[in-house]
Length: 263
Image (cartoon, rainbow, N blue to C red):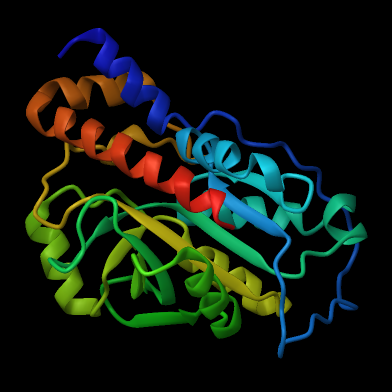
């Protein structure tokens, strides 16, 4: 595989912009948003090329919305959120509502690369039970009206690893009755519901349910960042699937940018 192609994909997945947040012993028990008519003022996006696409798409709205880069993975994101909620920035101006935006893998033949899915709910892939978190209905309906006819309402499932096999994607879709798999959704819902913060989620399909991916399982470090050497080695083992993923990811990133412009 040409080195230029590898470098593009490393840039796409490299999540090296994580923020270092200090822990402070303060509380937020006074937080009390309006559950009947919530707004949103903060957008969370996985760091790297997803964040870049959303940031560019929202250039005209940056004065209205705060855009925050987050790490990938259930544990890294949970740690990030717990640290964030203790910072003066969070406590001085508590978020009224959150939108999680990013890419996701399709678990259904109904959705293909570039399709936009608004989550109705998001569950945890734990192989023993289906834990579900509900997205805010008002925010979801509001975004559905903003984004137009090519947006779908669906169900997500969150995994602690990249689902690489097309066969496993289809099996997970059937088992959990889910349409999209991601690595952050349930962690955010689990955290936000404890604080009564409304959340909506938007995913753009980056890989189809019949699309095999290179094995990227070991490419993620414990902090949610990508290890470039391991990533490159895994991609070189399966150049055909890697090139396919690069192409589909670039297409979905462009859609993600266009979606961000409408918010």
